[in-house]
Length: 321
Image (cartoon, rainbow, N blue to C red):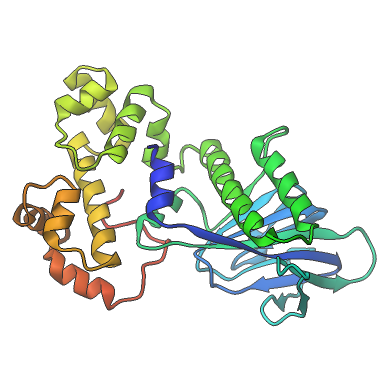
């Protein structure tokens, strides 16, 4: 179980492809601040994309993927200062199969720009750690011959189909595009990537992270973790702390607390059941650990969380995981 897979699965990331747009001449689109992560793929032509300031617009070319960490209003257009029309409420047509909407923007001659739009929503706060390495707006430019480029080609071909099951296939392909785009972007800017992503490239520490995420309830010790890394205890502890910024057992505790928050927020499982799932001997030892970590008892935390708005992905979780 690698960390990226674990975070995507536990965040219950759910994406949907919802439009296929063609723009001509002078055009601009304003997208609402609705999605926790918006994704746009440029299938032909070129455009500019920006969030708050047109001065910060990024040029996007055919084959590029734009990721917008939200919720954030953002724009696309033929030029950085293009006038925009709201995406919501713009006239659209859907194919008979009920797949992605067909959208048309702009007027005038010239080669068209075609692009698709999709959106992701997440549950809980693990998405903050997942998206921590992304700026507000990211342009991912796939390398020639990359898997992302190949997936975009398949996606573009499916958009032109009007066959049963199109939406299910588009949504599944969008999941592939997201994972491949995250891989490429995080690997391209390692300095900004989350510590866990950088650490996954280290054979020894990466093996330890996979073990922790595969079996978080195990009674982990530094010696046991060092054995997973095939290193001496002292060497492993130094390398892990240098790469993650946390001591090994502190990382284990932080991850267990992140999983505890998810379980407390998601349902009505008893504290004893949550404690067992995370490797604590009793609900009392779990409650004590949770209170030390969060400053409040798990029952009080659950009541407050269930009464509040779900957390966005724009800030890091309290424990830094």
